[in-house]
Amino acid sequence: MADPAPAPARSTRGKPPAGATGVLVLADGSVAWGKGFGHVGHAVGEVCFNTAMTGYQEVMTDPSYAGQIVTFTFPHIGNVGINDEDVEAHVPGAVGCIVREEITAPSNFRSQGDFASWLAARGKIGLSGLDTRALTRRIRTAGAPNAVIAHHPDGKFDLKALTKIAREWPGLEGMDLARVVSREGSEDWEGGVWHLGQGYARSPHDKRPHVVAMDFGAKDNIFRNLVKAGAQVTVVPAETSLETVLALEPAGVFLSNGPGDPAATGEYAVPVIRQLLERDVPIFGICLGHQMLGLAAGATTSKMHQGHRGANHPVKRLADGVVEITSMNHGFAVDNASLPAGIEETHVSLFDGSNCGIAIKGKRAFGVQYHPEASPGPQDSFYLFEKFVGMLG
Ligand SMILES: NC(=O)CC[C@H](N)C(=O)O
Image (cartoon, rainbow, N blue to C red; front, side, top):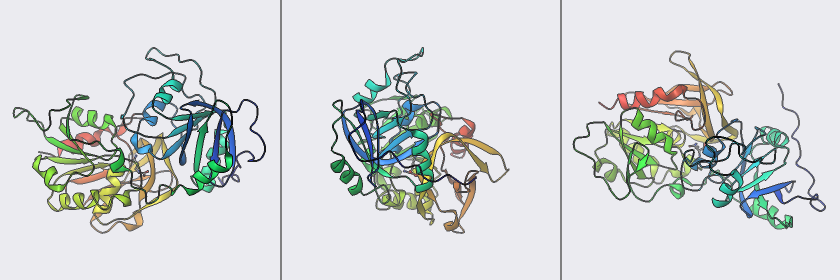
């Protein structure tokens, strides 16, 4: 079915409507008014949309969303409050979010507080009362726009200045954000708890395969899943050298998700991955890690029109035709037309045929574009963690 014409955001001209304390200003100058919540101020980023019905806390703490403003298509966001468990990382992710309905008082047995104050404490801006359906249709037809999201209780906004900020922002294409959100030191991960300051002190009695996980903006649930699948995990920063990775004696290397353009990591991550491949080190990559693995093996990546973000994206596993329902969050993709002879395509999106999985022929190395760790989303693809840990004999 053809999409309807892009719905324009509401007019730029004139004063904000009564009670407007928040505004979204697109780089083309169009403006949509709403009610601000969370952090007071403004931020710039690319506007994307996420179709998940739950999991807003995981979405807002997924570092892959750095440089982005998330529009939730589900109209009731924030109504189950927040808790300390559903945080995926403590580094910056999305700069703000746009929701349809005003946030109601939290009602859930797990709730420890309200979404708006939680966002404010993290410096993230929220906007409610926007026509999120119109905005989503606009993104689907015209692509993801750069924009400024702003919140001021007095309702005073310098629209000209905000438009200029949106227009001058360089955009995600070519932007390297993985090393910005990565951690500083290496740390052992165990059972979901960080043992700070213990460096590389792994027990000699621990016979589980050792996975060195490169953090390009990782979600914690990935590490929990690796441990659940039977590995011990050491997490290292994005710019860790080949020598340092090898000195940790990895049975396998994991490449995490993360924000920004994969092609912009060609100075540090991609060459390390290429050398790991040459040394036959087993590798598993998720999302940004998958894209980097593709680049290291000779494929290209490019920016998608609107990206895929949600918790029910169908993916076809080509080996047996099984459909996995997956969690997704990506705005770039490995170009399937660019796959060299050495790369096998293992999964494709049933929405648009874009690449969703690769395996490097003759190696124990594979990656998926989607998120088998869910958080939020279905757990159909947990088997991939078991597959990876199972190949580390
Ligand atoms: N979740 C991710 O790892 C996202 C990867 C990359 N930044 C993209 O947008 O495609």
